[in-house]
Image (cartoon, rainbow, N blue to C red):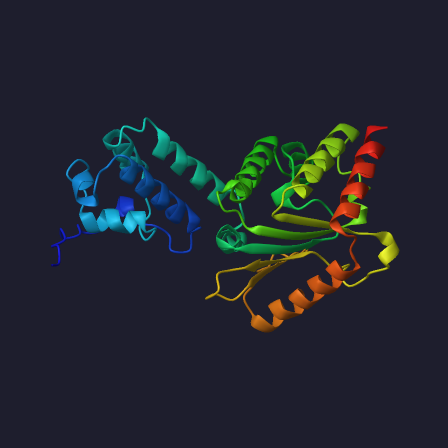
Length: 290
């Protein structure tokens, strides 16, 4: 038996959204809204008797097909007795979305949905494993950037690391060049803290961290870093290619991704085993301590 749905109201200018905006704001908000509604024991129709919106509208919100507004987030907080939980979440998600370049936003979506992530980084600790102090040191070197903007970017970078705290985080296969352990991005205390954080990450079972030593004489990855996001079985992998340009760095082209996969395999083959890599990181910690 089909259930009659309330007619959807005419689009309100307050509910319109930029179709090119970072979609994770909608998707993540929708998932949290649905979680809290179910926890409160309410059906969609029951919630819509408290908050004056159509059931179809609520369904689109929960599925990430409609952008939430602050007014609606506030109404949901009141209806579900959540204090300011949803409006705080919306503010945080909006802040993250606006503090990353538009071309980078699609990559954040792929990164968030990836089942595993393969990464090669020749120059610095990657953003997913940076400490706040290390990230602040990196981001503050951007010409003309203000202290306020630096802190906004640091917050956005730390929020990205939320994917590592999920109940089922992505598998990480990371290879770092040995030079990263020697390059003085900041003072000794910051560097020591960063490599201690890296060592702790290397001990996590689902993070496979290896160091490519100088003695490998490998030059395959010297042109730049890259990341490959392995999606679900029904979706092809996607790559993010690091460079100095301001162009699009996200690639879904199968041939290009395949070439990067081949390069990552070759780089990993020359890298130290995990245990030896951890020993090298420990040596770096000692070096930055003394």
